[in-house]
Amino acid sequence: AQSVTQLGSHVSVSEGALVLLRCNYSSSVPPYLFWYVQYPNQGLQLLLKYTTGATLVKGINGFEAEFKKSETSFHLTKPSAHMSDAAEYFCAVSGPRGYNKLIFGAGTRLAVHP
Amino acid sequence: GAGVSQSPSNKVTEKGKDVELRCDPISGHTALYWYRQSLGQGLEFLIYFQGNSAPDKSGLPSDRFSAERTGGSVSTLTIQRTQQEDSAVYLCASSPSRDNTDTQYFGPGTRLTVL
Image 1: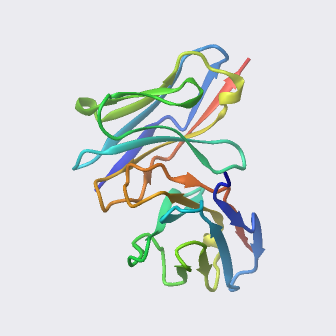
Image 2: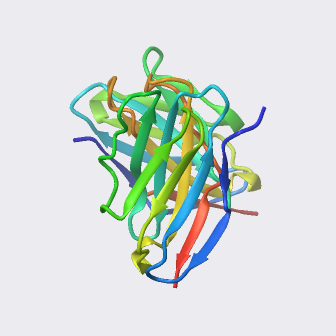
Image 3: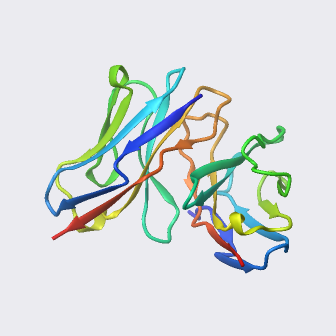
Protein backbone atom coordinates (compact mmCIF):
# COMPACT_ATOMS: atom_id res chain seq x y z
CA ALA A 1 0.00 0.00 0.00
CA GLN A 2 1.12 3.54 -0.65
CA SER A 3 1.12 6.33 1.89
CA VAL A 4 2.40 9.86 2.36
CA THR A 5 3.60 11.55 5.52
CA GLN A 6 4.00 15.30 5.77
CA LEU A 7 6.02 16.37 8.79
CA GLY A 8 4.62 19.46 10.42
CA SER A 9 0.97 20.39 10.06
CA HIS A 10 1.89 24.06 10.47
CA VAL A 11 5.02 25.87 9.31
CA SER A 12 5.68 29.55 9.88
CA VAL A 13 8.41 31.53 8.14
CA SER A 14 9.37 35.15 7.73
CA GLU A 15 8.98 36.86 4.38
CA GLY A 16 12.20 36.31 2.43
CA ALA A 17 13.19 33.21 4.38
CA LEU A 18 13.66 29.70 3.03
CA VAL A 19 10.57 27.55 2.79
CA LEU A 20 11.01 23.82 3.46
CA LEU A 21 7.98 21.53 3.55
CA ARG A 22 8.72 17.88 4.20
CA CYS A 23 7.17 14.87 2.50
CA ASN A 24 8.04 11.21 2.87
CA TYR A 25 6.30 8.44 1.00
CA SER A 26 5.91 4.72 1.19
CA SER A 27 5.49 2.75 -2.00
CA SER A 28 6.24 -0.76 -3.17
CA VAL A 29 6.62 0.44 -6.73
CA PRO A 30 8.37 3.46 -8.25
CA PRO A 31 6.10 6.31 -7.29
CA TYR A 32 4.83 9.31 -9.12
CA LEU A 33 4.92 12.28 -6.74
CA PHE A 34 3.01 15.55 -6.73
CA TRP A 35 2.80 18.76 -4.73
CA TYR A 36 -0.48 20.67 -4.78
CA VAL A 37 -1.31 24.02 -3.19
CA GLN A 38 -4.71 25.08 -1.88
CA TYR A 39 -5.52 28.71 -1.30
CA PRO A 40 -8.46 29.55 1.00
CA ASN A 41 -11.83 28.50 -0.41
CA GLN A 42 -10.27 27.25 -3.62
CA GLY A 43 -9.53 23.90 -5.20
CA LEU A 44 -6.11 22.34 -5.47
CA GLN A 45 -3.54 23.60 -7.96
CA LEU A 46 -0.54 21.60 -9.11
CA LEU A 47 2.80 23.09 -8.10
CA LEU A 48 5.04 20.39 -9.57
CA LYS A 49 5.34 16.67 -10.16
CA TYR A 50 7.96 13.96 -10.47
CA THR A 51 7.32 11.04 -12.80
CA THR A 52 10.64 9.93 -14.31
CA GLY A 53 13.95 11.48 -15.31
CA ALA A 54 15.57 14.39 -13.52
CA THR A 55 15.09 14.11 -9.79
CA LEU A 56 15.12 17.88 -9.18
CA VAL A 57 11.82 19.22 -10.36
CA LYS A 58 11.00 22.89 -10.79
CA GLY A 59 7.45 24.14 -10.51
CA ILE A 60 5.41 27.29 -10.52
CA ASN A 61 5.93 30.30 -8.27
CA GLY A 62 9.61 29.51 -7.68
CA PHE A 63 9.04 26.19 -5.91
CA GLU A 64 11.11 23.08 -6.49
CA ALA A 65 11.34 19.58 -5.06
CA GLU A 66 13.89 16.81 -5.18
CA PHE A 67 13.02 13.13 -5.38
CA LYS A 68 15.39 11.14 -3.18
CA LYS A 69 14.71 7.45 -3.55
CA SER A 70 17.19 6.42 -0.84
CA GLU A 71 15.41 8.65 1.66
CA THR A 72 11.90 8.07 0.23
CA SER A 73 11.47 11.83 0.33
CA PHE A 74 10.12 14.57 -1.91
CA HIS A 75 10.60 17.78 0.08
CA LEU A 76 9.33 21.09 -1.30
CA THR A 77 11.51 24.19 -1.13
CA LYS A 78 11.49 27.82 -2.12
CA PRO A 79 14.51 30.05 -1.50
CA SER A 80 12.59 33.16 -0.49
CA ALA A 81 9.06 33.17 0.90
CA HIS A 82 6.49 35.71 -0.23
CA MET A 83 3.35 36.71 1.60
CA SER A 84 1.30 35.26 -1.27
CA ASP A 85 2.75 31.79 -0.53
CA ALA A 86 0.56 31.47 2.55
CA ALA A 87 -1.66 28.48 1.80
CA GLU A 88 -2.01 24.77 2.51
CA TYR A 89 0.31 22.41 0.70
CA PHE A 90 -0.37 18.77 -0.04
CA CYS A 91 2.06 16.08 -1.10
CA ALA A 92 0.55 13.16 -3.01
CA VAL A 93 1.59 9.88 -4.57
CA SER A 94 0.10 7.81 -7.34
CA GLY A 95 1.23 4.43 -8.45
CA PRO A 96 1.92 2.63 -11.67
CA ARG A 97 -0.51 2.31 -14.54
CA GLY A 98 -3.94 1.33 -13.36
CA TYR A 99 -3.54 2.93 -9.95
CA ASN A 100 -4.72 6.39 -10.87
CA LYS A 101 -6.01 7.77 -7.61
CA LEU A 102 -3.90 10.21 -5.66
CA ILE A 103 -3.01 9.38 -2.07
CA PHE A 104 -2.56 12.63 -0.18
CA GLY A 105 -0.63 13.56 2.90
CA ALA A 106 -2.42 15.39 5.70
CA GLY A 107 -1.23 18.75 4.44
CA THR A 108 1.00 21.52 5.79
CA ARG A 109 -0.35 24.97 6.39
CA LEU A 110 2.28 27.60 5.59
CA ALA A 111 2.11 30.98 7.27
CA VAL A 112 4.34 33.83 6.11
CA HIS A 113 4.81 36.78 8.40
CA PRO A 114 6.39 40.15 7.68
CA GLY B 1 -9.98 27.63 -21.31
CA ALA B 2 -12.62 26.65 -18.81
CA GLY B 3 -11.53 24.63 -15.84
CA VAL B 4 -13.39 22.05 -13.81
CA SER B 5 -16.64 23.45 -12.46
CA GLN B 6 -18.76 22.16 -9.61
CA SER B 7 -22.22 23.00 -8.39
CA PRO B 8 -23.55 23.99 -6.01
CA SER B 9 -20.66 25.70 -4.28
CA ASN B 10 -22.40 25.28 -0.93
CA LYS B 11 -25.14 22.90 0.15
CA VAL B 12 -26.83 22.79 3.52
CA THR B 13 -29.16 19.88 4.12
CA GLU B 14 -30.91 18.12 6.95
CA LYS B 15 -29.89 14.74 8.21
CA GLY B 16 -31.63 12.00 6.27
CA LYS B 17 -32.10 13.97 3.06
CA ASP B 18 -30.55 13.01 -0.27
CA VAL B 19 -28.15 15.37 -2.07
CA GLU B 20 -26.71 15.53 -5.57
CA LEU B 21 -23.40 17.19 -6.36
CA ARG B 22 -22.44 17.99 -9.93
CA CYS B 23 -19.09 18.12 -11.70
CA ASP B 24 -18.31 19.42 -15.19
CA PRO B 25 -14.82 18.30 -16.18
CA ILE B 26 -12.50 20.02 -18.61
CA SER B 27 -13.67 19.36 -22.16
CA GLY B 28 -11.92 16.36 -23.68
CA HIS B 29 -10.68 14.92 -20.40
CA THR B 30 -11.49 11.24 -20.23
CA ALA B 31 -10.62 10.67 -16.57
CA LEU B 32 -12.73 12.05 -13.72
CA TYR B 33 -12.20 11.71 -9.97
CA TRP B 34 -14.14 12.55 -6.84
CA TYR B 35 -12.36 13.25 -3.56
CA ARG B 36 -13.60 14.29 -0.14
CA GLN B 37 -11.83 16.76 2.13
CA SER B 38 -12.79 16.76 5.78
CA LEU B 39 -11.15 17.89 8.99
CA GLY B 40 -10.87 14.46 10.47
CA GLN B 41 -9.90 12.46 7.39
CA GLY B 42 -7.96 14.85 5.18
CA LEU B 43 -8.22 14.32 1.42
CA GLU B 44 -9.71 10.96 0.48
CA PHE B 45 -10.27 9.36 -2.88
CA LEU B 46 -13.88 8.36 -3.52
CA ILE B 47 -14.35 7.19 -7.11
CA TYR B 48 -12.63 7.25 -10.52
CA PHE B 49 -14.15 7.17 -14.01
CA GLN B 50 -12.12 6.47 -17.14
CA GLY B 51 -13.89 6.58 -20.49
CA ASN B 52 -16.38 3.75 -20.83
CA SER B 53 -14.60 1.49 -18.36
CA ALA B 54 -16.25 0.36 -15.15
CA PRO B 55 -15.55 2.95 -12.46
CA ASP B 56 -13.19 2.33 -9.58
CA LYS B 57 -15.51 2.67 -6.59
CA SER B 58 -13.01 1.47 -4.02
CA GLY B 59 -13.05 4.73 -2.04
CA LEU B 60 -16.78 5.10 -1.51
CA PRO B 61 -17.32 4.99 2.28
CA SER B 62 -20.75 3.33 2.26
CA ASP B 63 -23.54 2.20 -0.03
CA ARG B 64 -25.26 5.53 0.58
CA PHE B 65 -22.75 7.02 -1.84
CA SER B 66 -23.04 6.57 -5.59
CA ALA B 67 -21.86 8.37 -8.68
CA GLU B 68 -22.49 8.32 -12.36
CA ARG B 69 -20.94 9.90 -15.38
CA THR B 70 -23.21 10.52 -18.33
CA GLY B 71 -21.91 10.63 -21.88
CA GLY B 72 -18.35 10.56 -20.67
CA SER B 73 -18.62 14.12 -19.44
CA VAL B 74 -20.70 15.45 -16.55
CA SER B 75 -20.66 13.49 -13.32
CA THR B 76 -23.09 13.47 -10.40
CA LEU B 77 -22.22 12.28 -6.91
CA THR B 78 -25.30 11.29 -4.91
CA ILE B 79 -25.41 10.83 -1.17
CA GLN B 80 -28.55 9.21 0.16
CA ARG B 81 -29.88 9.59 3.71
CA THR B 82 -27.15 12.07 4.61
CA GLN B 83 -25.47 11.87 8.00
CA GLN B 84 -23.60 14.55 9.91
CA GLU B 85 -20.31 12.78 9.25
CA ASP B 86 -20.88 13.38 5.51
CA SER B 87 -20.20 17.09 6.09
CA ALA B 88 -17.10 17.88 4.06
CA VAL B 89 -15.86 19.58 0.91
CA TYR B 90 -16.35 17.35 -2.12
CA LEU B 91 -13.74 17.94 -4.81
CA CYS B 92 -13.91 16.83 -8.41
CA ALA B 93 -10.87 16.53 -10.66
CA SER B 94 -10.29 15.59 -14.28
CA SER B 95 -7.25 14.57 -16.30
CA PRO B 96 -6.64 14.10 -20.01
CA SER B 97 -6.23 10.33 -20.07
CA ARG B 98 -5.78 7.15 -18.06
CA ASP B 99 -2.06 7.87 -17.69
CA ASN B 100 -1.48 8.49 -14.01
CA THR B 101 1.44 10.80 -14.70
CA ASP B 102 -1.18 13.23 -15.99
CA THR B 103 -1.95 16.25 -13.87
CA GLN B 104 -5.32 16.12 -12.16
CA TYR B 105 -7.11 19.47 -12.43
CA PHE B 106 -9.37 20.22 -9.50
CA GLY B 107 -12.59 22.14 -9.28
CA PRO B 108 -13.37 24.59 -6.45
CA GLY B 109 -15.39 22.03 -4.54
CA THR B 110 -18.84 21.77 -3.02
CA ARG B 111 -19.05 22.41 0.70
CA LEU B 112 -21.70 20.11 2.16
CA THR B 113 -23.10 20.78 5.62
CA VAL B 114 -25.46 18.24 7.14
CA LEU B 115 -27.45 19.60 10.07
